Image (cartoon, rainbow, N blue to C red; front, side, top):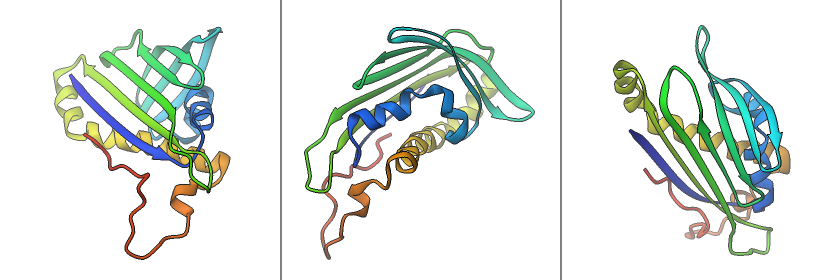
Length: 171
């Protein structure tokens, strides 16, 4: 089984980041390798989504259960699909330390997957971390498109100082 986790502090509110992550119908507009993303049905904070990922002509469609706790968390679980025997994502959002330039959000992202096919499992293990990082970065960039630049990245830089609100990627 492959796992990846990352924690970042972003210059957006938890509600803003949650809105981007929970807008499954828009994934195909900004997520790498996402060919299709549609909410099939929604009942309160629970939804079923159809997703198709890959590079044409090699794509894999699956259905995912989406469990939402606005604006603090979102969890997805693959409920079918030929490619994965297990696929789960978890996003958690909490208010970060307030700064004069605006709100901050501590984002925790975790993904776990297991391929059904041994060949895909071997190939996937070579690129899994890079793909997961690109996926997390795509959500961050989408926040910038919708809400303006991350104010933690656009705040005036002071010589010899490091932004204390940025945390490195974790593997």
